[in-house]
Length: 294
Image 1 (cartoon, rainbow, N blue to C red):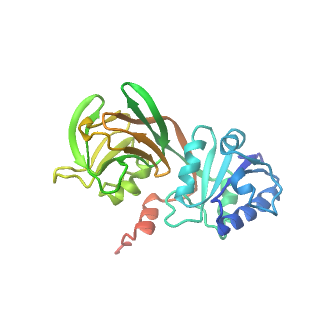
Image 2 (cartoon, rainbow, N blue to C red):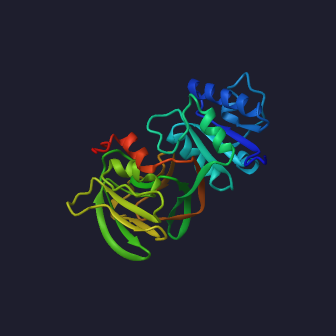
Image 3 (cartoon, one colour):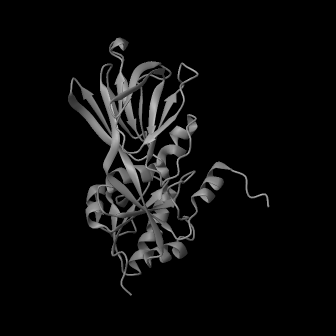
């Protein structure tokens, strides 16, 4: 039988004993079945019983046709921002808490993973956001986000003022603790905690969620996924430092008067799941929703 995948990259949660144990098990199990297995270098340096080539994450993306991320959703987000630039399938083993993006269990992964390796899986493409900070028309910083890009003050609990434009059209001004621009993937993360709606992953949409708005009319709004969102930080705030956070991992510095452009990124994450995965079953499990009554 022709293999669906040939070279597999293992990415983990650095300095996490449980994740390291799972990666060792995966490495020996996969190499025993004839797969070429590469390790992300930060984790590879911590494993004494594994003799594999250790590579930076971007080189893993170039060489692998499947990447297995061991950890929580945070680890998946960090890996996804890089791996989305390459045509590599990504699947997760949950060693975190909620695990919306990580399907495989750390114990007993062999059976579901065997089926995936045999070609029994579903594929979905999750789009990312590109966030850019412009000052006087000059690009100062940019990065991508799987979940959300957030404009917020550099100091905690500090109100900021900004204007919001959609595709060049003024929508409203806002006085709030910040603004969350979220993908459907991120709608069950920060945006949900801030009172936003859940968007199913197949939607081509963005949700904008004001953070603690100083107005009862400040409500989340869903816009087309191909929209360009522009946030203009009010120059009347003086020299107050601002930040644009991407997935809570990468921070872009900003200042009053800057323009923050948020749009769909050119690349998408190719996420794969075991056959039969039900998105609403995941929501019921992770969010504690009620089961069927009859």
